[in-house]
Image 1 (spheres, rainbow, N blue to C red):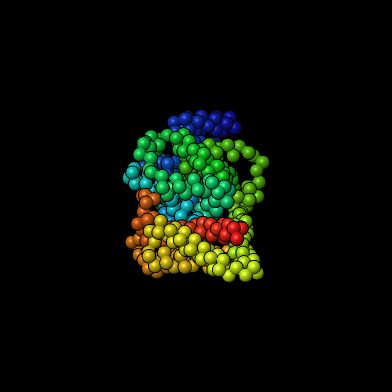
Image 2 (cartoon, rainbow, N blue to C red):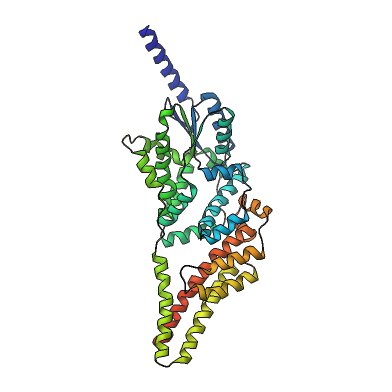
Length: 408
């Protein structure tokens, strides 16, 4: 009896090995209880592979590279309410949403080129699991935490490079998308190339998520056969991290979920500006140079208004938004807790209210240029560019005032 059982186990293992050898190249069998599918987020082939593996292998759990917010956006692609947009402005999250939207736009562009929506294979994994009553585990880190950590890890020059690459660089017409979908190594190489532009962002977007995904998989290993559906660029990193047997998953995940504290340095730097202004005015008044005091005030106001207005004009903001942002800039530059872009963005929202159609087009845009044409995108751009212009004007104004005082 025992010999028969041992023979059966041996035959089963041999059969499993043969099946594993015949698996598609994008399906990686780690062991008898864990398979990882490396997908392209814009590939019809990936959808078919996911659905077939769920049907034929019948896993006990399907682990998907999604967080709750990303799953909601896939299931409800048209959900962007006016209240949400206003909250983004009030909370100062416009730069973060701009970054996320620009990243998504590039992926959507590729998806529309291939006739498939980005993330369709992840949504297919969720739907196939639900249809077969298979539990789902969302194993990716919340996208906002990822973006915040990426932004915090990037140096100023990296941030400038990333925003320029996404907002102003031309599309790469030489990119062979069909080859990209067939070659997981090419996908991995693209992720690695992102490090050349922003090494700091690469840590949060690639390395940390490789670790996070592998630790989440490790957490659910005891629940039975696991089929993990992740982007092909993450597969090798996940496999490598799964070999570390002494990891404390809970501790690692808690650490990777920490939201970095906002640096106080920018606010401290901006506090220097009003200090320069008031010190200059006080010094000139003490010396009785009241004409110079007026010159200082005029220089400060004009430079703030000009550059804040210019930033909003570059965002193609409404003329009233330009005026409001320009007027608010000299005042807000003296108070680091408020920003001219917030007032400009709110005014843009009121003067050109985004409609449901705007929200839908914004969420499915295939080119970053839609930011300048879509009312939702314009609100975000007006807010961000207004703040940038105001900051530039504040520093140039402060420099001009120092020059004026030293020249007297």
